[in-house]
Image 1 (cartoon, rainbow, N blue to C red):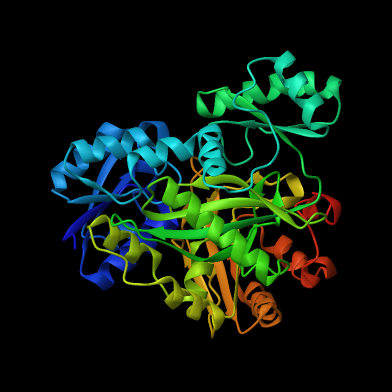
Image 2 (cartoon, helix red, strand yellow; image 1 turned 120 degrees about the vertical axis):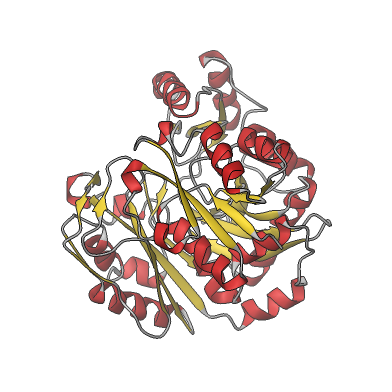
Length: 452
């Protein structure tokens, strides 16, 4: 096991990694921008090194600064957290070329799975169902029109290098296809520096289901169950839960095994997530993409399995084989109950989810049986305007979904955050909504039921 690692991230995930490392006896070094000089996790780490001014492009995204900090602190490994450089193949390769272990998957897997066209081809070779669509990139409008005619409208443009819903546009006819092609391409180029698009059949009523994967460098790959991430706003996840409340036992098994096959085919190790679309009408699932990192929603998986995914990442990166077999995980999942997570953001739902930076006048987290709050904030903390608006994650666990929903309602009522606008009132509304409580909804839930 490593004796000292560097955490190349900030906020809630930095603190979450530190806590696991402390339990394991691993020293931690955190990097921070000038905007995060008062962050509480700087006090908990063994060392903190400033790497630049507030903008991420001048600090958290500067590879040379992070590597310099790692060399100054003489660390053996770097954990990238999520966001920032966590899925950057170049960064992973630089770490390894500097003889610093990258706590994540192999560079080749990041490259292959980071490109959605490449990932889709690997999925097809592994026998994983994929959504009907173009064979590779669509280079121009005419090619897109030809593919749309072949697979039928509506169709969906997706950015090959994309994520978070950017570079995605739906076309219902040739006219909207022409206008959306350039919009999607421009957005993808601006967001990812890569305007490559591909086309897929758009499934109008679907669930978003993903499978948590854990692999090691010795060829073992396990699934840790599936999560449902269907409650979204503009393709941004709001609520995650496990297990998925609508798929049957056979579909659950098939989707989990499909994820394992895909990751084995990719030579994957460390934690990762295979994301799928579940067509509610036809009761079929299709591969969507792979996230080659720890996910924001990983705590719900931890709640039902009892595993610490950061610990497992550290063990794999240090060369250890997985300590578990699939039947061990299956037994844990069988009696694991139900877990739900809400992302608590400094955003104002009444103003189109506009960011709400500023000083927190008061913060009182909820507590009690089956309640977990992962956050880095405190009363008097100033939410900076430079980064993602997530303040923390509220996670609950219950014997079943009904108990988990009750605990989430109580936890949301107990959670106090004053001084900035947050998404807490929205979640209170969602957890009282009949469609959510029934579990019968699709990815259009926030727009069709809440008007967002």
